Length: 465
Image 1 (tube, one colour):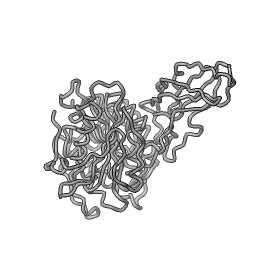
Image 2 (tube, one colour; image 1 turned 90 degrees about the horizontal axis):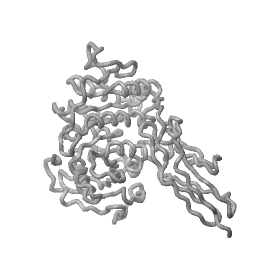
Image 3 (cartoon, helix red, strand yellow; image 1 turned 45 degrees about the vertical axis):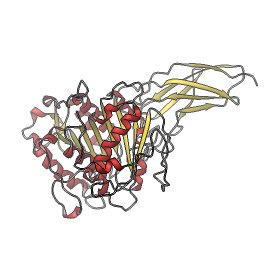
Image 4 (cartoon, helix red, strand yellow; image 1 turned 90 degrees about the vertical axis):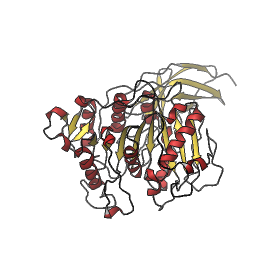
């Protein structure tokens, strides 16, 4: 499968790659664009300057890629796309470092890609969130360059699983319309493309709906305060836009669902606890068994449907008017959907994976413990608990926080990405006696409250001064 391109690629050839594998941008940038988390394999980054010309991308952009350690051949790439404005651009800088989204990518041998457009506050978001304005071509060039840098040239041709917030949802939906044969699934949080000119959204160019896009699983995910239960305010137009998008796509037979977040406005809240299992189900069904083969169709008979504003879902065969209902890929996802649209309390009874590679460094009379963190695919990770000699020593972080939803080890920004500076899986034990042997272990606790098994222990003796 060859990568698709937009009509003009000339500007891409003139773009300058200024950062690969962690090199900082060479030109001075105002925050937030210079606050890059440091990267080293298995994380890579490329940065492109803005390009001139009618088909050029108006803003500089960086793409950060995480590759699951040990993967031989990538089967796809999960794209986590931020929304409009400087704050959202800043959030995009940490997207590829998210342990929870990495768990989804790892489960399917996919890369995790986090773009970050350098859109100044108040500038025209359409200059990037409409993929026809150069961002589709820049994205595809990034897959080529990052594939070469990471030793995975297949990245340029693999399918895409897209997640986008606000303007990022507009971008993801537009990519489905332009490249339906490349998109395995798309989650549209608080943003959708248009199919007809809207006088209330002047300057936004409508898309056309190709037949091939009807086979791409998509999910609209607005907050209830974006026009469902709150009818005025800045984001009141989100729900009417989602309704029009649903009527067009689902009315034509498209595989489109709706999951109204019952707690939020434009912030992302707890949506990841449905979005990630939903994408997991779609990737499981659609990714081809062998590289280069086309995406597989979703199993039609397994689908469930539910009312678009929430309620009880049931198998598709029980619906007399299926095109009026929200499409869901299977029963397991439907059960999570019903919990999510009620109070976002999606149930997860599975334990998270245990941390691995526990290490200890001794110095200045203290033991510094560190480990490789792994997140539960369904519920992420809230904290790590450390044990010394069979007794609880402490936890990291001491007080997990998240103003937008369930507390998380990495915290959470408005656009569903980890806080900076990135959380470090580390604990220092300063209360040790020289010559005394101690045994340490660590376990993970997911946001659903489930604990992993303990890691392999490590035994340390602090030498006498």
